[in-house]
Length: 257
Ligand SMILES: [Zn+2]
Image 1 (cartoon, rainbow, N blue to C red):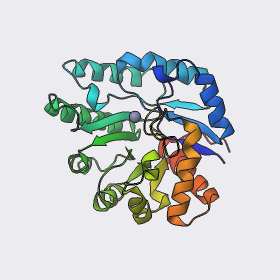
Image 2: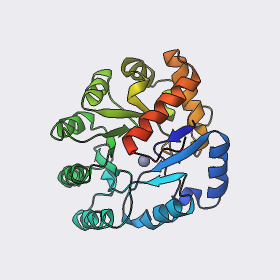
Image 3: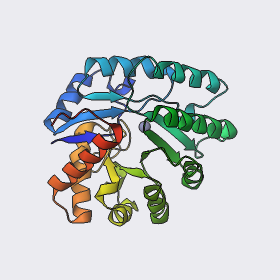
Image 4: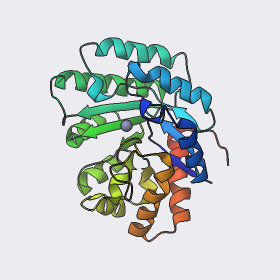
């Protein structure tokens, strides 16, 4: 059984030059499946092309990222609804709330998030949630949708918030930030345990130590897993098996092992 990177933008422009090599390095590092979050219609053709080119490795989701919620968000959501009936997707996302950058579309972000939660409800797909400076608001909304499962990607919040997310049936997405010096993620991982986490890179962003600040890629997943092994005192093998099983179950991936 190998690792799964549950969140990588491998289809994006940042990997245009060397995507084959990046995938190759990932396979060599023992990361043989990559879940791809969608952002908005602008890059969706790249996502589809990548999913077609690497069918047993890359698995696409579809969604509208909160920072891409603009005046045209209703049209974006219609397009998502249409495509859900046409192509195979493994989840809805990334969707959620980002109250860090720009609050111009504050109300629209909430509307777009709830719309996508309803889509997840109707399709019974898991959701990949982006939450920045918004975990309390996100948890309040998730409580209204008890039948949805998902992941709070790149989790940031308190230990209490983490416990709440787990209680609501969500996995926590743990990435490179867990290796950063001032992160509270070690405390959170220790509190919720490995049965409630998924591994992710969020490539090209948030590379783990010792690659911090450089372009991130799925081959770095073992560095994140190693840090989690240190935190929990578990074998690396157990971290791998447990997080892979968690990901297969949540995203309903075909069993290849
Ligand atoms: Zn992302």
